[in-house]
Image (cartoon, rainbow, N blue to C red; front, top):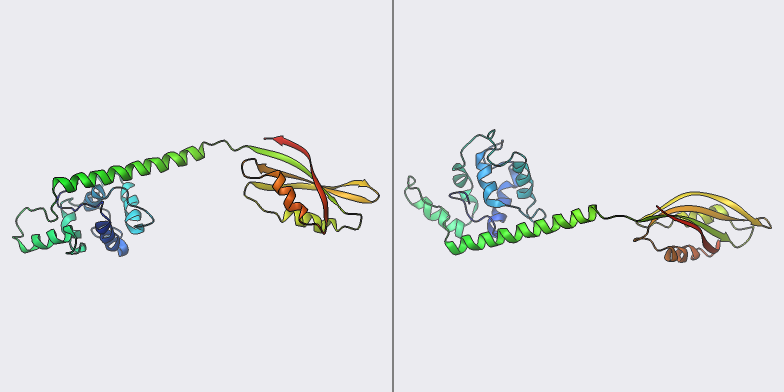
Length: 235
């Protein structure tokens, strides 16, 4: 932990930093500096949804790399810049208030900590790192997962030669599902002036059930008499 900075793993201190960064891009001025690096070292993995300003600032500083030689300024300045953001009701704020009353030249820890607090901070950080790594691994597993797809030729039969086939096809195509893509279609004569709709579709096998899809098509009973799977091929 950077000298003079509080335990930035606590909700109270992260909330104070969130408010501080609400109308600021950086800890010191309008450009990134070593003061940002010092606070960055103390924060570690903020929760993006809970602390969006901290997360935005954190990711920006991370892009420069810790201890980036191109960043000006003094790390030690960070404590004096942000000490006022912590209320007196927090351990950090109380220590800061006590430090302000002392000799300004004294080299004191404005926020104070003991071994128990440091151990707790390290435990919380370890838990957050573990949670981050777990979520990252889950995302990588999803990325690497094989998606099985099938190309299906579906035949949809009307009631008779007076059935509006354009309305029938529009009804079928109105069905939308995650993992379903409708393709080309044509009318195929079946006799006595009756045509059936032959339509191609691509489905993700784990997301779309053909039985359920045919049940939904059958609900358009003003137009549809029945439907059959004429062909299916795995991609």
